[in-house]
Image 1 (cartoon, rainbow, N blue to C red):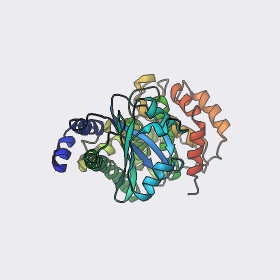
Image 2: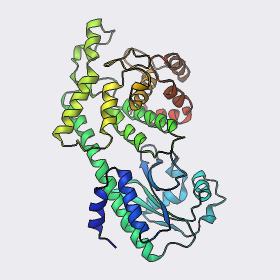
Image 3: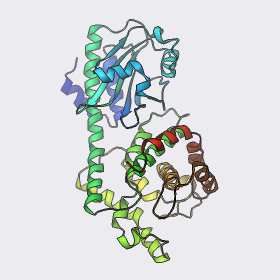
Length: 372
């Protein structure tokens, strides 16, 4: 059996987190070929949601799935007690009311081993190992899986630390420049989660995992960092901008892109996965579906998907939030306006994805009111 260090080094050379997980899975199957699926789910403490993220295996019945941890009794107990869960025969869940248990069993998995993943004492998710037969997990196998779970936790921590470094750096830049844009605070919490909800909905029929939607969620709060380059007399003007002032305001996407690139270079984060998603969000979130947006006048599918998603999330939150110059619109009023903008400023499929997930959108809105 390879050493912890050797396995980690080998996995780290495998590219993306999905590639690294696949490498660890293959390494595990050399000893225990019946482990046919390894998956990682992430936990969002602020919303209590556990969400699928990335997996390795021939069949993944739970892509784009999420549930409240508090509603998953067994997983919740693992999180509270920091213990593992071993199920040698998943037939005990064949009649479960929980959709995740039903799908796992229907996909042909017959055993499972679940390990919580903690970073710096904080729950960040769970690793799930599934076997294709009953009674598969010997003590030798469990010892190996505990090692793999530790390595996955280390890789996940490494993967997130660069993103958190970048976000902390940007936040410091915002603080140091006394950034006072009224669209901050709870707005960023809401719109980033709206964006993730839209992304997961759009990809529900896809075979891809959920890395894109999670990185989109992480990067969405940075969409307007270019506004720190806009003079206060323009950025904070309470009334309508003049034509000249609006031209100044329109420089913030490109300015933000240059700022992000500079920060990435200075902090040596150029190896950051999904960096293009970050830059596309910053530079292109004011492009319009009909080509009349800025800075590049891109239209339709030429606009990066991540920018189209963030645009819809940003507009919806702006409409439904109180601002110094307006009262909050009702959900009905906001949706009516977004339907009008669909096909002009906004991507119709992204607008429709938001409408189809209003239950989740409303829960997010209630979780992050402006007064917090």
